[in-house]
Length: 362
Image 1 (tube, rainbow, N blue to C red):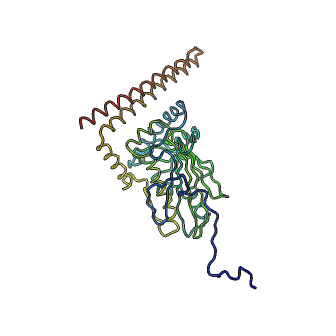
Image 2: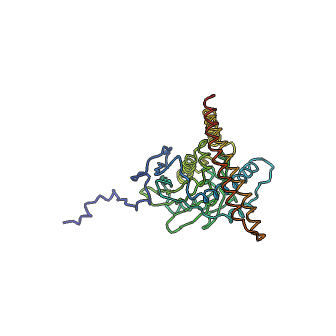
Image 3: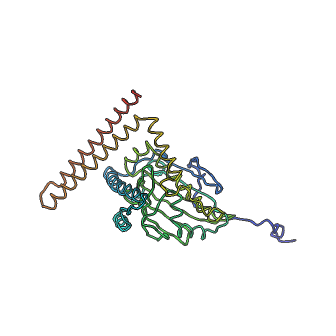
């Protein structure tokens, strides 16, 4: 009798690669609408998406609010000078590097599915080994992130383990997204951790694994809003929707390099990018469709800005008293923090009232 293996047809090879580290169709993950494209891109989400929950304590949220506002101001200036011909870039690359070194990681806080959203993005990369696909991301970060609408500052020819980078987007609204990169070459994995001032508290890992026709790219992300300000932003433009769209295009860029579309630019970083213009157009339509909500967002945001200003003054005054050896620095900080919170809460109520009036009028 012939061995059992002799009955197996030689022209039907068996493909049994190791399963990817996550599955967007796994129980507990709900599908999110996306363009599957030629790379079979999929998204599965668990948790408060798209209405993201806010992570951390009151003090942690205020710290992230202050850092976000500081970065947003610089990010707007950087975007404006970067897209105005003949204008020196401000802040400079050196300033950006210094800012990044002063930031701390801000991982998600809470339970996945409740305070924290989990998203699994997955796509196919035929005609590429995991090593080749991983190397493309590491060695061409400007192209990969650029397809997602993110410019790297300072410019990076390749990703470095432990490297810190500012991802600048055109919005809406323009902003800075500080991140730190961790590379695991042995497992073909790239982890991105957010830093202070990022719109999201988050961490995500891209893993390239072997498939029967090339490579599977699995991106496992956990994130949440870093400050209540994000809730105001979401009233006008979806934060998580923007993230999903960005990574859909980044996945497609990697696919294109090995499948006849090396020139794929995705969203791109141009100020006249069709995708960017579409985003601004959608935000303007949202405002026009509900002017009362827009007024509420403006008032709420103004309250947060006033809160941040009062907190800064209190911090400076308290530090000055501490430096001079005069008792009461902590009391000053606590009192001004309470006043600032009161202004923010009052603005929320005023915004709701004005929204009702505007809705009644229109």
